[in-house]
Figure 1 (cartoon, rainbow, N blue to C red):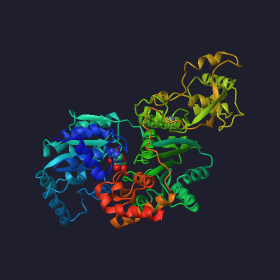
Figure 2: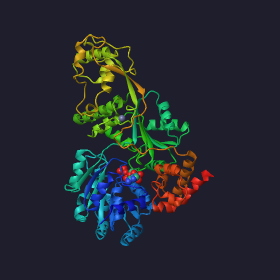
Figure 3: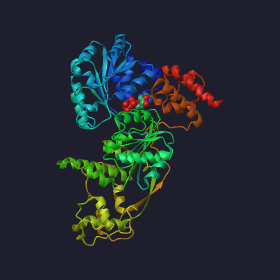
Length: 603
Ligand code: ADP
Ligand code: ZN
């Protein structure tokens, strides 16, 4: 029988972490009882630990099914640095190489074996037969949403995993994914036969990510001002087109940053090289189209910038989610405006499929609403995924802004009478254009007595904009909301004369206020400002050690460990024990080097 103490001892020994995260505990308890489970946890939540730690607590082998070789390699490198015997099988290995792996398995040394579904379930089946003779404790299916054609990364080979229980009867299956939508979830359960298994669903909140959005006015200045706050940290900048990635990368390079562009127009060799350079911190800023990011696990990406409105909130959430996987404070900045909505809505049209076009357009509208909103951005995001956040988050631009109110009754009346004259059938952007004096299609000209608000520029927000910005997140998240709708608050305004006290529409201006962090949610681990010279020396040492071991530096020393190292200032190897991320093997391998680097600076 396993003790909680054994679990913690093992966690501390190999990983150097003091405790499991609250979401990991029940999952690990479940699988340690030999049960199957489905785990839905956001990126960075720590899914891997849910099978890696049980693998170490058991005597046999844990099989991990993973879709991408790059991800497998990263995980195996990481485990080996911690002193854990792990390997991956892929089709490029020679028979000799895979025999070596099987020998290690035969000796009972190997704890985790990573494999792609194509390889495991290949028709020839020789590998499958070989694995059937081995004591397998558990099969972890990582990125389990790849099994579903409803999911966003469908991989046909994953559907063959349906037969896992036939090949490995009685072996528990742990399916893990960060995709939460119901259709995908049901599909995973059905195909992997998890009907009776426990389901662990976690909040999609990423408290460590700070969200903000700005109207795009002078994009290069805005980008440089933002990047400046992150000097040599890693970040991803997303653009819509290849040409723009090139332009932005050039601007960043001219300003002295180590930046490169990444898009589908590069050869696969170039793409691989750049990705590798990014992982190794030789490139700090990757300016990319959305093609970038899928296959990388880099946990110290500190920020993600979108230079344009993304197509939908799912994509935005996934892309911004690539920041802060290590749980440290990170930022997501969205620049939007210009013709984004118009350009993207053209892409929403799916030939011959009106329904699907409407769905895509609806998603784009909700993305635009998110960008325009004055409401806590985390509330909107979570609402979109069906979660209710009771209090404002205190960690987004809207929460950090006090909105000054002033009476905008008259503007509101003009706008509402226009909306009424147009018989409630047009979208907001269009109505703002009419109010500002653009003529629009003929039938609008016949809507006489529309009172124009010519004096209002588009940047100077009209009451109309403000009306939309105050909409509650539940309504922003409503997929059926497509046009301006009549609401309770609007009607009294229409009948009453303008003047003080006639209504309650208000125009609002931004005024930054000191940040008020949520009290009820765990704040992300704070990042004390470390002695920069020490940090620089330690980080340089980590890069040298990483290079010698041929692995990325963040696997040798994570951002969090670096920070703790520079604040705790351990003097002896024993002191390193209490520094986050220093397990026994890592201390033995690298401990002295880091103590040395710290000492060097003190001298
Ligand atoms: P996911 O696969 O859910 O995106 P990962 O398994 O890559 O997340 O974990 C994200 C980060 O969290 C990694 O850097 C990992 O080392 C760290 N982590 C996982 N579990 C813990 C823990 N119990 N304590 C501290 N850090 C943890
Ligand atoms: Zn907020």
